[in-house]
Length: 135
Image 1 (cartoon, rainbow, N blue to C red):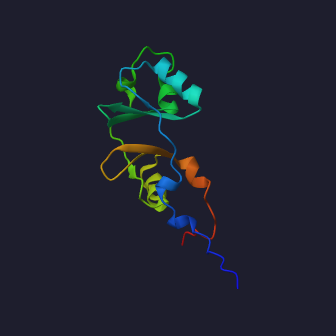
Image 2: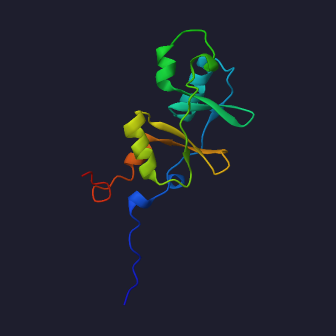
Image 3: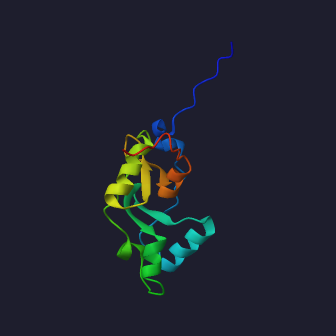
């Protein structure tokens, strides 16, 4: 008899299974330089760090809002950053997208160290109707 492993249900996946390597910046970077980094790496956000601590996040929406203005990242970044843990189930990120209407999450380990980034578009990659039925 063949021993075929059961398919891992997407809803049981952990954030670390989907996260990507984060691109970080310092808070004194100009918006123009931040835009260049985002374009270079084809990303939608930069995590702002200081002394290895997350102090903010800036998105492409933020840059467009202040397009052409001679500002620095720290002047426009979101300072209240909601993070998720790498061992959290992806369901937690889905709930945060619904509740907080945000789509980009820095991922931290149990010690609070930045280890990745998760975009709401990443969640769509694992969507399986049987796994995520909403009642």
